[in-house]
Length: 223
Picture 1 (tube, one colour):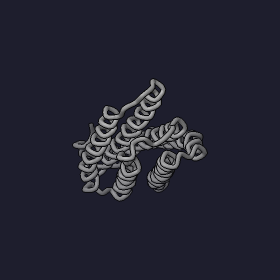
Picture 2 (cartoon, rainbow, N blue to C red):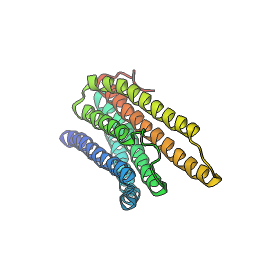
Picture 3 (cartoon, one colour):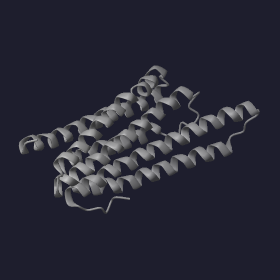
């Protein structure tokens, strides 16, 4: 591979990863919309589309391996490829969490907790992914550090939402075992949704952490 071709491969890798992130964010939005609208068809579309994300991941993984094996990159190029390899793993896992939203939609009965704004939390996580990928594209280290602070806010949001669900559960008066069983299923679904959205935020921070390492050789956000 000529040097020019090698640099083109690096550029192509970045562009392909950015495209993968766009598809993943679209699936997250679809999963959130399916959950809000109780749209089973949209939920199934998210679930069935997971194979496409997995294929993207495997193709990009192979590209990273070939660049490492054939070129033996050093310094900044090595960090770029290593960070990119980690970032596609986070994107693939975010896509898996979008599939979870599809599954929750198919199992949901009714929305019993209007005080918990899942859509607002979803919007926060999508913004974090978008900003993390923008930081990766532009190598913006300030944005990487700022994302870590925003994750603390998301964690507090998730904690408050979980507390609302638990408090509401305690205060409800239920008359039959069937009502209890139905409510517990909805509570479990909602708590899992909150947990999964919090994990999406964690993956966004992981992307920012790898970008910071890629640009500055700084591992302060890697955990």
